[in-house]
Amino acid sequence: MRILTGVQPSGKLHLGNYFSVIRKLVEYQNNVDLFCFVADMHALTTFTSAKNQTENTYDAVCDFLALGIDPDKCSFWIQSEVPEVTELTWYLSMSITVPKLELAHSYKDKVAKGITPSGGLFFYPVLMAADILAFDSDRVPVGKDQKQHLEYTRDIAERFNAQYGDTFKLPEPEIDEETAIVPGVDGAKMSKSYGNTINFFDDEKKLKKSVMGIVTDSAGVDEAKDHEKSVIYAIHSLFLDAEDKKKLQTRFSTPGTGYGDLKKALLENILDYFGPYRKERERIAADPAYVRSVMKKGSEKARATSSQILDRVRSRLGIGISRV
Ligand code: ADP
Ligand code: TRP
Image 1 (cartoon, rainbow, N blue to C red):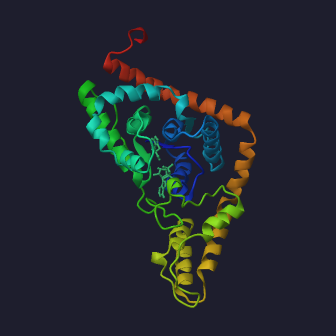
Image 2: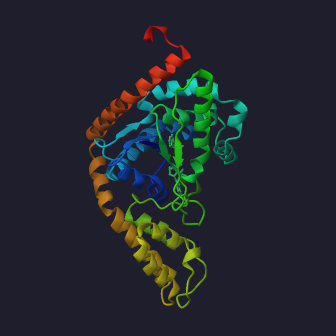
Image 3: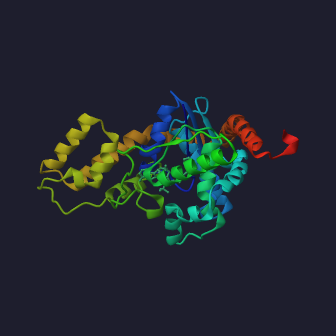
């Protein structure tokens, strides 16, 4: 079983990223063939400066390493350092039409938000299909917002197989219902682009500000509170087992505890949980030579697979005479 996923290095990691994807990856690397990468080419669709691009990529690598991704147990690399993926993007583009790409929700949403409708933004799903198909992935853990991109990947793979002969496995999306949509501090989906995130690697002061900013209804200290409607509960429960969830529910339903206290309890839990990871992150980030060497080895390891798959693809297409 090969599981693959990518995360864009477009800002600080938040609880939505962690609970929907990253936590699972750290578990998976012990039992399955895990491939994960930092999608820096996708991040070019929202480019600000070369300096930010490099820093964000470096930060994302440090984040993953600190959170427990172990390069000896999985393949972990930076997308742009595996050139087979961009080559495959071109080949795959013959297996999807422009009208189909025009229907992509993510493209339409981003354009509606004012992001330039560049060719790259339009082509985003094809690059993502190449990320997945270049490694014969069986399953792809993602958040719900990526569901359609996985459908595009499967369509492209099926069409390619029909056009040129059986070449690609059809990957399955893996979308966890419980954590499919982690809410942000305003109750909408937690997302960098909505400015409603809780970034667990922020310093304590900023974290406190984010947690204290969670929206609540107007129930006072002396009133019972409905945990099911509470963003504080929705976020806090991600950290808890069944027994602790029950205890927290009781705190909500028993008058005497204000939202301020419930937020403080959440903040403490976040700090406790991520404390060791925060220390580890500082240590790793201060050693660029180590980070670079891990990434160099990571891309070599990933290319051992992608280069074989690309040989297969080129031969189906009859492309590249001197390579045969
Ligand atoms: P953002 O929406 O903040 O830009 P990304 O697009 O970088 O986040 O998401 C990285 C991964 O985390 C994706 O698989 C995405 O589906 C998942 N993800 C992001 N936000 C959430 C959320 N609020 N709930 C669940 N999963 C999420
Ligand atoms: N588009 C994904 C996101 O925004 C990131 C990504 C790029 C990805 N390539 C991928 C996820 C391949 C899974 C598999 O979250």
